[in-house]
Image (cartoon, rainbow, N blue to C red; front, side):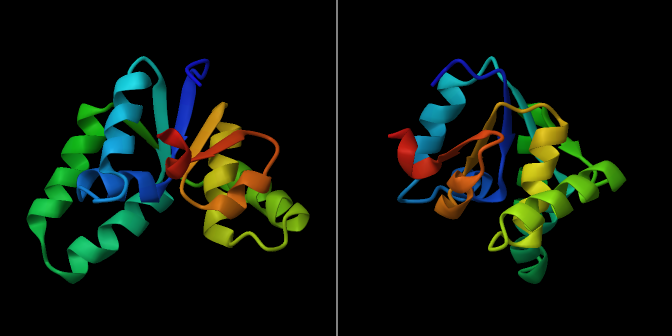
Length: 139
């Protein structure tokens, strides 16, 4: 699985890693080690999804840890623009059970030229434009 050059990181894998998930932390730690030479991309959607809980809990430590991690790992955060929005609409048209936020994440990965989409949403494995791998599959 190490033939990938640009990896899109969905929200769940970041949550698992930063919050030391009992089930998935070791998978994510192995992933970061195995793919350390890759370029990483995520979207502004991930920022929103990740930060909901820390803001709800008024936990500045979690907020700061998130940004420190993003910058330390040199993960590019891509804004959602018109091109991504249009691609997401095409994805939703072809995969009617995908949620809009998932379609925006996948569209971002496509537009940014990612060749791997790391998620833990098994439904997204139906998407054929990019290799979608779940955290479960990393062990």
